[in-house]
Image 1 (cartoon, rainbow, N blue to C red):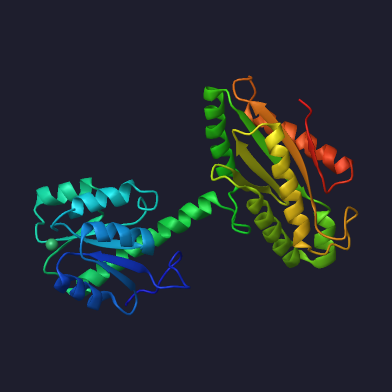
Image 2 (image 1 turned 45 degrees about the horizontal axis):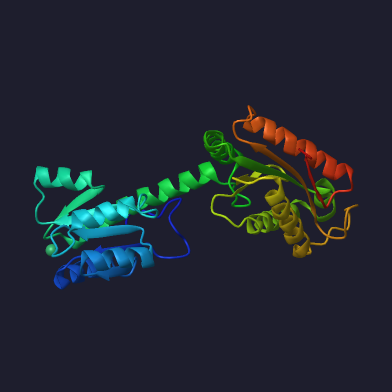
Length: 311
Ligand SMILES: [Mg+2]
């Protein structure tokens, strides 16, 4: 290879490539071309290809067009329609590379074509280029949406999701809950243990917060510094309280020593809970301000606890 791998390229594993072709000889040629620096998965029918796609979660798919039963176009459409397939490049390998066939394939979501019979080096180079693009795109998307330190959603992503969930709550007149969370005496923690330990503490607290959320629609985010926020759609106050208690408990159970905390001998958090009914004329910022006010109350009352507006 003339190029070194670049950012986004996985460093802890080989790229995974799925080859789907009804002719064993074609799979063999592709396998020989890619083995060594790829983990290659194989399937000899469209149906089997979809199954292996779900199980192996490949980074790229090489797909024969003409197969008995489910053909390549159908396989590609199903991959693209699935939750894990939108970002996985599919390259058609085909003996029919007329303009019309290519337009049809691109319409089904393929990124490229390779004509049969192919040269192994051409296959390797194209696969590499598309993997490079895929990994860079994944990396940029992740950097745009997630906090680099904790892996939780970042503030911008949270605000976008919140805006969408709030509109849904307004349409359906449903409740929505927000938890504002602050690590107790975190400045003292940094002063006492150093900033590297502080970063590790934030990572652990973030993990404990994430574990307290049970539903896929719930979202935990780093709001800034040592502040976190959770969005609980379709949740009223009686249901938000137990989540906050679980979260408080998870953080205490980390048992991270905090000798400089006035609240406890271990790292703890304070939580402010706010809920509102969609359609009540309030905005997401109002809910955040309410949760912040409750967080302030929780701190004033001694920290290591949750407070909620008594609506
Ligand atoms: Mg075929």
